[in-house]
Length: 423
Image (cartoon, rainbow, N blue to C red; front, side):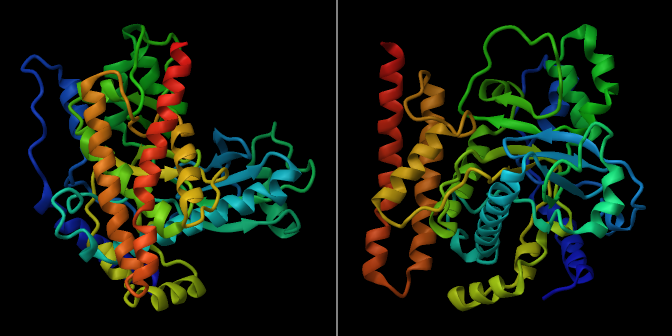
């Protein structure tokens, strides 16, 4: 097991190498406004040379307990609170029932996904020869660092006063998940988003609004933005649709490939259906994100895959201004390595809102993006399966057919829904 200091040193060395990979962005129109050019740079999929940032969560751990927590999000099973400029968030169960089922389930699913992606990063040879996938990085997964039970009277005595006054921390037995915070996008990126998408009268107030400091962008590659801008503007969980991403000069195909890579690893290495997982653009991770999984899980991974070294993960990381993250695992379920599991995953993908490119798009550019996503998914899936079933050729041949079952079933489900909408 590496210490925080060792991981931080490797992490900084990886950042120093980032400049080798900086590329020229897609050309924008000659009359494009300055805000559009800034937004293109800020949301680029390519690595960027950035100023140093904190590399551990020690600063957050050492802040005085009196530091107030503010609500930054709310989901089906819990409400998320954070401390300003800290590296951790706290997810408070909404009901005692969620404490008993949803929160432990979410942490278990997230841990499976995190370990699967970590193993993939520890095996750079998997995609090194692939022109399609070699330039891509898997999405990041926030580390679930601790579960604080309701029965931990000492923790609650210290921390309950930190929650907002309108939060009833004494109503029933509700546990808390402590999770690595997805860093919000930096101030210049937030200002560029405001300039690009906020109606003129509200831009100054939007840039100064405290709530917009917690900006994450939900990347909707399966939905187009239509109609006039909304009257109310907020950067919290800001939806960026595929046509807006194209207009901003983003390489949507590259992000589609990274989504596909993440989904393939989640399906065939973590064996999770990825139901209702969100893909967001946030800031680059700190060294906390590269901390090793628990000793028992890591030992199991070493036995199964022969070579796992956290240094390889860190050395291969290329930092950029906007990093793709996968968050929210409370609705995920395990899948079996058979046709039923592949079809379950297909239903989850179709139901997963607007994040993935969709089969059977209305426009050719959307159909082409689906083909990019599909081809990357199939290549990544088959590569991972060949690696993981190297010692069981008979089983490997069976499992190798499942990614295409997944794709075929998804296309079938999508076609049925489109026909039903058309009447």
